[in-house]
Image (tube, rainbow, N blue to C red):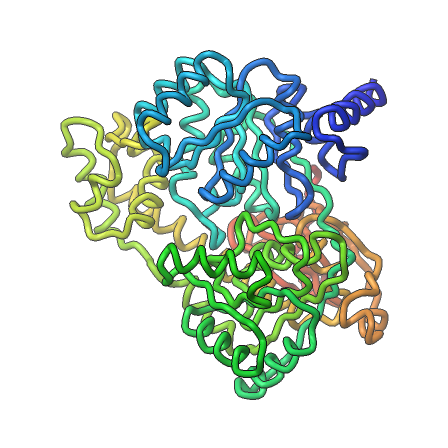
Length: 547
């Protein structure tokens, strides 16, 4: 039966997309969706995630909603479906750039079954008209692209993604497919929880990118670091991407590169929309050899000839780092991945992770404001009533909804729940959740530091982080090439990778990797911890759980 299904899906790929073969994970994800299972597919950038919903949709009666976060990304996806050699149905996009008459015409086609795919940004669900149109003709498949945007852990967090679970239920919970290029175990769990996925199948494939040569260069002196950085870029095959932590650094490094004849351009969120578009277009067309950017750049970028990704500053997590380096070598050509590591950079990241804390009075004030309203109110209307940023406002509302204090309608409007009780106690629980989040964020930064300083195979480190229990050396990272990785002590490993354990103080966790005589565990409540194995065994700190 499985063999028949495989042949059938391969035939779908050939007939509708002209593919001779499917990539790892595509076939399994398509089969899962065709069996009407909620599915989370975690596959690296460039692995053909869009083909999953395109092919599945050809065999599922009804239409498909695709939630996509960026206007440019929506446009690219619609254009790819409209190509002459693609035969998967018609597609349209509804966003802030179209006119009222265009919007009405698209929904008319949707109602009449003349559209297979409708692309929407999550913000479109703020419009009650959008919800009513979709309720009148519910989709059979609901796709969330860039699903990691729902996670508060990452730099790509989009607060409007938090309501998608409510929208899915309002539409009768069609089969749900979440797609992302990077999601470590805690991020996967958050995606599943927030989307309300029912017994989902989790498909994680293709994280190994053997064409990427991984390296870390250590510096204590900032001037020396910049000098060697500029020389390194002069030597490397271009085009390439450079990631930095601050907007100021994008400008200074871009100037330094242009002064030595490298055609570089800066990109950060402080630029005007038109300036960002010009910078991205210059890089995509190879007019600029190097783009120096903050994490604002990258989502939806599909450039096949990127030959290097350098990080001038350390990333906030392995999740972010792996997504960013995945933009290199998309065509399979060799690409250089270098982290310019200065321990001082960790302090900057710690500062970022600890910022923006709520206090108990703000949480209680927000709940009381919602309680005082005579009818449901939208977060945008709440904004002038309380001194909170829009992002913090939506995050706090999300916590209050999780604790049963408020209810969120599909349009994003909120009202007080009948179950709302002791607001002081609720506020304390929100603060506790915030503290747990900060602890886990900082533990993920600690994993980034471990990657920078590890003497074992760097590729093995990354794959272990994402739950792939790889043990062999890659032969294509600086530690392997220098023979350092081969010299590591092959110590005993009493707890298998991915097994569940219990720590006396930190509770339950998952074994992620070994580092010489140390063990790395991802704890449910406090995040990643690196423990001396000898001390843990001697003191009886770890107990293996039966799962």
